[in-house]
Amino acid sequence: MRMNIRNMVCRHCVTALSDILDRLAIAHGEVGIGYAEIEEGELSPDSLKRLDTELAAAGFERVVSTDDLLVDKVKLAVLHHVRDQEECHYNLSACIEKHVGVAYDTLSRIFSQNEGRTIERYHIAQKVERVKELLGYKELTLAEIAFRTGYSSAAHLSRQFKSETGVTPTEYIRSLGGRKPLNEV
Image 1 (tube, rainbow, N blue to C red):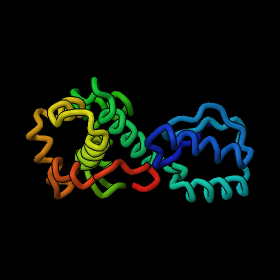
Image 2 (cartoon, rainbow, N blue to C red):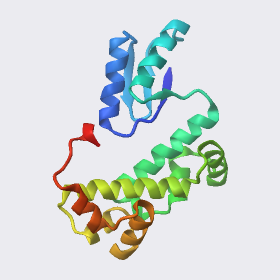
Image 3 (cartoon, rainbow, N blue to C red):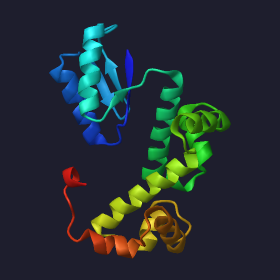
């Protein structure tokens, strides 16, 4: 049985979920971003309660409604779109339709109703987070980061970055000082 999990964004989340399942002795197969294949049939109400408690402590949550599942699939498609250098140059709506298998206008309506913001606003927020990550490495020029994240130019990236964060990319880099460990972010 596939169990969908909300708020997973990276391989560390996959490890954390695997650890939770192991700790609770819930037999599982593959664990990926946003899901775990549970080998048992239905979990008992007590097992689900313990699982929900552990998931919440880790910042995760089981997805139970169809709309929630679609919203999470959209979020995963957006993350894929933002982090895949080849794919980020393609149309966002086409990418999401391809990954989710549902018409974009339907997904857009459901997403906005459930999240209180549009898919496009969520996409911009994720792109800015990706830009922050790349700026923190201090290995790429702004033009290279713009290309990797699907911006048409460094100027466009800078305008959107400032609009979202209130600071320019250069000001953001200066504010970083040394690189912080992930647990201090």
